[in-house]
Amino acid sequence: MKLADRYSNAQPSGMVKIFQAIEKMDGVLNLSIGEPDFDTEHDIIDAASNAAKEGFTHYPPLQGFLDVRTAVCDYWKRHHNLDCVPEEVLMTVGGIQTPNLALRALLNPGDEVVLVEPCFSPYFVQVKDSGGVPVSLKTTEENGFAPTLADLEKVITPRTRVLLLNSPCNPTGRVVPRQQLEEIAAVAARHDLFVLSDEIYEALIYKGGHVSFATLPGMKARTLVMGGMSKSHCMTGWRVGYAMGPVELIRVMTMIASSQTYGLNTLAQKGAAYALANHDAKLIERKKIFAERMDYVVKRLNNMKNVTCTSAEGAFYLFPNIEKTGLSSEEFVWKLLEDAHVATIPGSAFGTSGEGYLRIACTQSTEILVQAMDKMEAFLKG
Image (cartoon, rainbow, N blue to C red):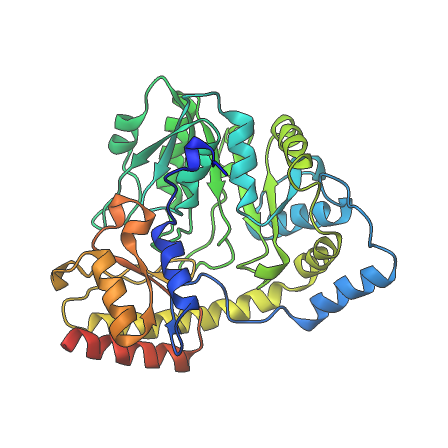
Protein backbone atom coordinates (compact mmCIF):
# COMPACT_ATOMS: atom_id res chain seq x y z
CA MET A 1 0.00 0.00 0.00
CA LYS A 2 1.21 3.49 -0.86
CA LEU A 3 -0.06 6.46 1.11
CA ALA A 4 -0.79 9.81 -0.45
CA ASP A 5 2.34 11.94 -0.75
CA ARG A 6 0.87 14.66 1.48
CA TYR A 7 0.69 12.17 4.37
CA SER A 8 3.93 10.28 3.75
CA ASN A 9 5.77 12.17 6.51
CA ALA A 10 2.77 12.86 8.74
CA GLN A 11 3.57 12.94 12.45
CA PRO A 12 1.25 13.27 15.47
CA SER A 13 1.15 16.70 17.09
CA GLY A 14 2.81 17.41 20.42
CA MET A 15 -0.60 17.12 22.04
CA VAL A 16 -1.44 13.77 20.44
CA LYS A 17 1.97 12.34 21.41
CA ILE A 18 1.21 13.05 25.06
CA PHE A 19 -2.25 11.48 24.79
CA GLN A 20 -0.76 8.36 23.20
CA ALA A 21 1.89 8.06 25.90
CA ILE A 22 -0.67 8.35 28.69
CA GLU A 23 -2.65 5.44 27.25
CA LYS A 24 0.32 3.17 27.91
CA MET A 25 0.97 4.33 31.49
CA ASP A 26 -0.70 3.62 34.82
CA GLY A 27 -1.29 6.07 37.64
CA VAL A 28 -0.98 9.27 35.60
CA LEU A 29 -2.48 12.46 37.02
CA ASN A 30 -3.87 13.79 33.77
CA LEU A 31 -3.88 17.58 33.46
CA SER A 32 -3.50 17.43 29.70
CA ILE A 33 -6.99 17.04 28.31
CA GLY A 34 -9.52 19.84 27.89
CA GLU A 35 -12.52 17.79 28.96
CA PRO A 36 -14.65 18.65 32.01
CA ASP A 37 -14.68 15.88 34.59
CA PHE A 38 -18.42 16.35 35.12
CA ASP A 39 -20.68 13.75 33.52
CA THR A 40 -23.56 14.90 31.34
CA GLU A 41 -26.55 15.70 33.55
CA HIS A 42 -29.09 12.89 33.73
CA ASP A 43 -32.05 14.97 32.59
CA ILE A 44 -30.18 15.75 29.35
CA ILE A 45 -29.62 12.03 28.87
CA ASP A 46 -33.31 11.41 29.61
CA ALA A 47 -34.31 13.99 26.98
CA ALA A 48 -32.27 12.14 24.36
CA SER A 49 -33.62 8.77 25.50
CA ASN A 50 -37.20 10.00 25.38
CA ALA A 51 -36.63 11.32 21.87
CA ALA A 52 -35.50 7.86 20.78
CA LYS A 53 -38.63 6.31 22.26
CA GLU A 54 -40.70 8.92 20.39
CA GLY A 55 -39.23 7.73 17.09
CA PHE A 56 -36.31 10.10 16.51
CA THR A 57 -34.08 7.29 15.28
CA HIS A 58 -33.79 8.26 11.62
CA TYR A 59 -31.52 10.53 9.57
CA PRO A 60 -31.63 14.13 10.77
CA PRO A 61 -32.06 17.18 8.54
CA LEU A 62 -28.64 17.99 7.05
CA GLN A 63 -28.48 21.46 8.64
CA GLY A 64 -29.87 20.22 11.95
CA PHE A 65 -33.31 19.99 13.52
CA LEU A 66 -35.21 23.26 13.63
CA ASP A 67 -35.78 23.01 17.38
CA VAL A 68 -32.08 22.65 18.20
CA ARG A 69 -31.09 25.47 15.84
CA THR A 70 -33.77 27.63 17.44
CA ALA A 71 -32.41 26.71 20.89
CA VAL A 72 -28.92 27.79 19.76
CA CYS A 73 -30.31 31.16 18.63
CA ASP A 74 -32.25 31.64 21.88
CA TYR A 75 -29.22 30.73 24.01
CA TRP A 76 -26.90 33.20 22.27
CA LYS A 77 -29.47 35.98 22.36
CA ARG A 78 -30.11 35.35 26.05
CA HIS A 79 -26.47 35.12 27.08
CA HIS A 80 -24.57 37.30 24.60
CA ASN A 81 -27.14 39.45 22.79
CA LEU A 82 -26.32 37.86 19.43
CA ASP A 83 -29.23 38.01 17.02
CA CYS A 84 -29.44 35.08 14.63
CA VAL A 85 -32.14 32.95 13.06
CA PRO A 86 -32.19 29.17 12.51
CA GLU A 87 -31.31 29.60 8.82
CA GLU A 88 -27.97 31.03 9.99
CA VAL A 89 -27.11 27.97 12.14
CA LEU A 90 -25.51 24.67 11.15
CA MET A 91 -25.16 21.78 13.60
CA THR A 92 -21.75 20.13 13.25
CA VAL A 93 -19.99 16.99 14.47
CA GLY A 94 -18.17 18.60 17.37
CA GLY A 95 -16.81 22.13 17.39
CA ILE A 96 -13.77 20.91 15.45
CA GLN A 97 -15.78 20.28 12.27
CA THR A 98 -16.91 23.90 12.02
CA PRO A 99 -13.58 25.52 11.03
CA ASN A 100 -12.88 22.61 8.70
CA LEU A 101 -16.11 23.22 6.79
CA ALA A 102 -15.74 26.99 6.85
CA LEU A 103 -12.18 26.98 5.54
CA ARG A 104 -13.11 24.62 2.73
CA ALA A 105 -15.97 26.93 1.80
CA LEU A 106 -13.95 30.15 1.97
CA LEU A 107 -10.44 29.41 0.66
CA ASN A 108 -8.99 29.25 -2.79
CA PRO A 109 -5.55 27.60 -3.18
CA GLY A 110 -2.87 29.87 -1.73
CA ASP A 111 -5.22 32.07 0.29
CA GLU A 112 -3.74 33.03 3.64
CA VAL A 113 -5.32 32.54 7.06
CA VAL A 114 -3.98 34.52 10.03
CA LEU A 115 -3.82 32.38 13.17
CA VAL A 116 -3.29 34.15 16.49
CA GLU A 117 -0.71 32.14 18.42
CA PRO A 118 -0.64 30.33 20.74
CA CYS A 119 -3.68 28.56 19.31
CA PHE A 120 -5.44 25.21 19.00
CA SER A 121 -3.05 23.16 16.84
CA PRO A 122 -5.64 21.51 14.52
CA TYR A 123 -6.23 24.96 12.99
CA PHE A 124 -2.87 24.71 11.19
CA VAL A 125 -3.73 21.32 9.72
CA GLN A 126 -7.21 22.37 8.66
CA VAL A 127 -5.93 25.46 6.84
CA LYS A 128 -3.40 23.39 4.89
CA ASP A 129 -5.91 20.65 4.10
CA SER A 130 -8.24 23.34 2.71
CA GLY A 131 -5.57 24.58 0.31
CA GLY A 132 -4.74 27.62 2.40
CA VAL A 133 -1.55 28.97 3.90
CA PRO A 134 -1.43 29.39 7.69
CA VAL A 135 0.21 32.64 8.77
CA SER A 136 1.20 32.87 12.42
CA LEU A 137 0.51 36.08 14.30
CA LYS A 138 2.77 35.68 17.29
CA THR A 139 1.76 37.12 20.66
CA THR A 140 3.60 37.49 23.96
CA GLU A 141 2.81 37.17 27.63
CA GLU A 142 3.66 40.87 28.05
CA ASN A 143 0.82 41.73 25.66
CA GLY A 144 -1.55 39.32 27.36
CA PHE A 145 -1.26 36.82 24.50
CA ALA A 146 -3.56 39.04 22.46
CA PRO A 147 -2.71 40.51 19.04
CA THR A 148 -1.54 44.09 18.84
CA LEU A 149 -2.87 46.05 15.89
CA ALA A 150 0.63 46.77 14.66
CA ASP A 151 1.51 43.08 14.61
CA LEU A 152 -1.78 42.24 12.91
CA GLU A 153 -1.20 44.80 10.17
CA LYS A 154 2.30 43.41 9.57
CA VAL A 155 1.10 39.89 8.69
CA ILE A 156 -1.76 40.92 6.40
CA THR A 157 -0.97 40.67 2.68
CA PRO A 158 -3.05 40.86 -0.50
CA ARG A 159 -3.49 37.07 -0.16
CA THR A 160 -4.99 37.25 3.34
CA ARG A 161 -8.56 36.01 3.30
CA VAL A 162 -9.42 34.90 6.85
CA LEU A 163 -8.56 35.84 10.43
CA LEU A 164 -9.13 33.11 13.02
CA LEU A 165 -9.65 34.29 16.60
CA ASN A 166 -10.21 32.31 19.80
CA SER A 167 -11.47 34.08 22.92
CA PRO A 168 -11.59 32.78 25.61
CA CYS A 169 -8.40 31.17 24.42
CA ASN A 170 -7.13 27.62 24.40
CA PRO A 171 -4.35 27.34 25.63
CA THR A 172 -3.71 30.65 27.43
CA GLY A 173 -7.03 31.35 29.16
CA ARG A 174 -6.86 34.86 27.71
CA VAL A 175 -10.05 36.86 27.05
CA VAL A 176 -9.63 39.65 24.50
CA PRO A 177 -11.32 42.80 25.87
CA ARG A 178 -14.07 44.59 23.94
CA GLN A 179 -11.95 47.61 22.97
CA GLN A 180 -9.29 45.38 21.46
CA LEU A 181 -11.91 43.31 19.64
CA GLU A 182 -13.36 46.51 18.19
CA GLU A 183 -9.92 47.53 16.95
CA ILE A 184 -9.42 44.10 15.37
CA ALA A 185 -12.86 44.42 13.77
CA ALA A 186 -11.83 47.71 12.19
CA VAL A 187 -8.73 46.06 10.69
CA ALA A 188 -10.83 43.17 9.39
CA ALA A 189 -13.23 45.58 7.71
CA ARG A 190 -10.43 47.69 6.24
CA HIS A 191 -8.74 44.66 4.67
CA ASP A 192 -12.00 42.86 3.76
CA LEU A 193 -11.20 39.84 5.94
CA PHE A 194 -13.65 37.17 7.01
CA VAL A 195 -13.38 36.26 10.71
CA LEU A 196 -13.75 32.78 12.17
CA SER A 197 -14.44 33.44 15.84
CA ASP A 198 -13.96 30.34 18.00
CA GLU A 199 -16.10 31.02 21.06
CA ILE A 200 -16.42 27.46 22.37
CA TYR A 201 -15.50 28.63 25.91
CA GLU A 202 -18.09 31.45 26.00
CA ALA A 203 -19.70 30.10 29.19
CA LEU A 204 -16.42 30.15 31.13
CA ILE A 205 -15.39 33.75 31.75
CA TYR A 206 -14.35 34.78 35.25
CA LYS A 207 -13.97 38.56 34.93
CA GLY A 208 -16.60 40.53 33.03
CA GLY A 209 -18.68 38.98 30.27
CA HIS A 210 -18.23 37.41 26.88
CA VAL A 211 -18.26 39.63 23.79
CA SER A 212 -19.30 37.72 20.70
CA PHE A 213 -17.38 39.07 17.71
CA ALA A 214 -20.46 39.04 15.49
CA THR A 215 -22.18 41.54 17.80
CA LEU A 216 -19.61 44.25 17.04
CA PRO A 217 -20.78 46.95 14.60
CA GLY A 218 -20.67 45.73 11.00
CA MET A 219 -19.19 42.34 11.88
CA LYS A 220 -22.12 39.94 11.64
CA ALA A 221 -21.91 39.81 7.83
CA ARG A 222 -18.21 38.91 7.91
CA THR A 223 -18.09 36.59 10.95
CA LEU A 224 -18.73 32.91 11.61
CA VAL A 225 -19.18 32.21 15.32
CA MET A 226 -18.08 28.72 16.35
CA GLY A 227 -19.63 27.11 19.43
CA GLY A 228 -20.64 23.80 20.91
CA MET A 229 -21.85 21.78 23.86
CA SER A 230 -18.63 20.08 24.99
CA LYS A 231 -17.22 22.65 27.39
CA SER A 232 -20.33 24.53 28.50
CA HIS A 233 -22.68 21.59 29.02
CA CYS A 234 -20.18 18.76 29.63
CA MET A 235 -21.26 16.85 26.51
CA THR A 236 -17.88 16.06 24.94
CA GLY A 237 -18.82 12.53 23.95
CA TRP A 238 -22.02 13.66 22.25
CA ARG A 239 -19.97 15.54 19.62
CA VAL A 240 -22.31 18.52 19.26
CA GLY A 241 -20.93 21.68 17.70
CA TYR A 242 -22.56 24.46 15.76
CA ALA A 243 -21.77 27.36 13.47
CA MET A 244 -23.59 30.71 13.27
CA GLY A 245 -22.96 32.91 10.27
CA PRO A 246 -24.14 34.32 6.94
CA VAL A 247 -26.77 32.18 5.22
CA GLU A 248 -24.76 31.79 2.02
CA LEU A 249 -21.77 30.41 3.94
CA ILE A 250 -23.95 28.12 6.06
CA ARG A 251 -25.54 26.78 2.88
CA VAL A 252 -22.17 25.82 1.35
CA MET A 253 -20.88 24.37 4.63
CA THR A 254 -24.03 22.23 4.84
CA MET A 255 -23.42 20.96 1.32
CA ILE A 256 -19.81 20.04 2.15
CA ALA A 257 -20.86 18.35 5.40
CA SER A 258 -23.44 16.28 3.54
CA SER A 259 -20.63 14.38 1.81
CA GLN A 260 -18.63 13.98 5.04
CA THR A 261 -21.00 13.15 7.88
CA TYR A 262 -24.52 13.48 6.47
CA GLY A 263 -25.84 15.35 9.48
CA LEU A 264 -25.30 15.31 13.23
CA ASN A 265 -26.46 12.43 15.43
CA THR A 266 -30.21 12.73 15.92
CA LEU A 267 -30.34 11.94 19.63
CA ALA A 268 -27.35 14.16 20.43
CA GLN A 269 -29.24 17.04 18.84
CA LYS A 270 -32.32 16.37 20.93
CA GLY A 271 -30.24 16.27 24.09
CA ALA A 272 -28.54 19.52 23.09
CA ALA A 273 -31.86 21.29 22.45
CA TYR A 274 -33.01 20.38 25.95
CA ALA A 275 -29.68 21.36 27.56
CA LEU A 276 -29.54 24.76 25.87
CA ALA A 277 -33.04 25.62 27.07
CA ASN A 278 -32.84 24.30 30.64
CA HIS A 279 -29.30 24.38 32.06
CA ASP A 280 -28.31 28.02 32.56
CA ALA A 281 -28.07 27.56 36.33
CA LYS A 282 -25.72 24.60 35.92
CA LEU A 283 -23.37 26.74 33.81
CA ILE A 284 -23.00 29.20 36.69
CA GLU A 285 -22.50 26.41 39.21
CA ARG A 286 -19.73 24.73 37.23
CA LYS A 287 -18.01 28.01 36.36
CA LYS A 288 -17.64 28.70 40.08
CA ILE A 289 -16.01 25.30 40.59
CA PHE A 290 -13.56 25.82 37.72
CA ALA A 291 -12.67 29.28 39.06
CA GLU A 292 -11.89 27.85 42.50
CA ARG A 293 -9.74 25.11 41.00
CA MET A 294 -7.72 27.54 38.91
CA ASP A 295 -7.23 29.95 41.80
CA TYR A 296 -5.76 27.09 43.81
CA VAL A 297 -3.44 25.91 41.03
CA VAL A 298 -2.23 29.45 40.20
CA LYS A 299 -1.21 29.98 43.83
CA ARG A 300 0.61 26.66 43.93
CA LEU A 301 2.42 27.31 40.65
CA ASN A 302 3.61 30.75 41.68
CA ASN A 303 5.17 29.25 44.81
CA MET A 304 7.19 26.74 42.79
CA LYS A 305 10.82 27.12 41.85
CA ASN A 306 11.39 28.78 38.44
CA VAL A 307 7.68 28.95 37.57
CA THR A 308 5.38 31.95 37.14
CA CYS A 309 1.74 31.91 36.15
CA THR A 310 -0.89 34.57 35.51
CA SER A 311 -4.51 33.97 36.40
CA ALA A 312 -6.82 32.81 33.64
CA GLU A 313 -9.62 35.10 32.52
CA GLY A 314 -11.61 32.37 30.77
CA ALA A 315 -11.76 28.71 29.72
CA PHE A 316 -10.25 26.23 32.22
CA TYR A 317 -6.58 26.36 31.25
CA LEU A 318 -3.47 27.84 32.85
CA PHE A 319 -0.34 28.63 30.85
CA PRO A 320 2.59 28.81 33.28
CA ASN A 321 5.99 30.13 32.20
CA ILE A 322 8.75 27.55 32.80
CA GLU A 323 11.60 29.25 30.89
CA LYS A 324 13.71 29.68 34.04
CA THR A 325 13.94 25.91 34.45
CA GLY A 326 16.31 25.87 31.46
CA LEU A 327 14.25 23.16 29.79
CA SER A 328 12.29 23.48 26.58
CA SER A 329 8.54 22.98 26.76
CA GLU A 330 8.87 19.49 25.28
CA GLU A 331 11.71 18.50 27.62
CA PHE A 332 9.87 19.77 30.69
CA VAL A 333 6.57 18.07 29.87
CA TRP A 334 8.13 14.70 29.05
CA LYS A 335 10.36 14.72 32.15
CA LEU A 336 7.37 15.67 34.32
CA LEU A 337 5.38 12.81 32.83
CA GLU A 338 8.14 10.22 33.13
CA ASP A 339 9.46 11.25 36.56
CA ALA A 340 6.30 12.43 38.34
CA HIS A 341 3.50 10.85 36.29
CA VAL A 342 1.84 14.25 35.82
CA ALA A 343 0.60 14.90 32.29
CA THR A 344 0.51 18.40 30.77
CA ILE A 345 0.88 19.76 27.22
CA PRO A 346 3.99 21.60 25.94
CA GLY A 347 3.28 25.18 24.96
CA SER A 348 5.12 24.60 21.70
CA ALA A 349 2.24 22.32 20.62
CA PHE A 350 0.23 25.52 20.13
CA GLY A 351 2.74 27.28 17.89
CA THR A 352 6.19 28.77 18.39
CA SER A 353 4.73 31.53 20.60
CA GLY A 354 4.02 28.85 23.18
CA GLU A 355 7.65 27.82 23.65
CA GLY A 356 8.69 28.25 27.28
CA TYR A 357 5.20 27.48 28.60
CA LEU A 358 3.00 24.50 29.29
CA ARG A 359 -0.76 24.09 29.34
CA ILE A 360 -2.45 22.81 32.46
CA ALA A 361 -6.12 21.85 32.23
CA CYS A 362 -7.91 22.32 35.56
CA THR A 363 -10.52 19.77 34.59
CA GLN A 364 -9.89 17.31 37.40
CA SER A 365 -11.15 17.28 40.96
CA THR A 366 -9.43 19.43 43.57
CA GLU A 367 -8.10 16.24 45.17
CA ILE A 368 -6.31 15.27 41.95
CA LEU A 369 -5.06 18.82 41.42
CA VAL A 370 -3.56 18.85 44.92
CA GLN A 371 -1.74 15.58 44.23
CA ALA A 372 -0.51 16.82 40.86
CA MET A 373 0.79 20.10 42.28
CA ASP A 374 2.55 18.25 45.11
CA LYS A 375 4.29 16.00 42.57
CA MET A 376 5.17 18.89 40.28
CA GLU A 377 6.62 20.88 43.18
CA ALA A 378 8.74 17.93 44.25
CA PHE A 379 9.86 17.43 40.64
CA LEU A 380 11.02 21.04 40.42
CA LYS A 381 12.91 20.81 43.69
CA GLY A 382 14.84 17.89 42.20
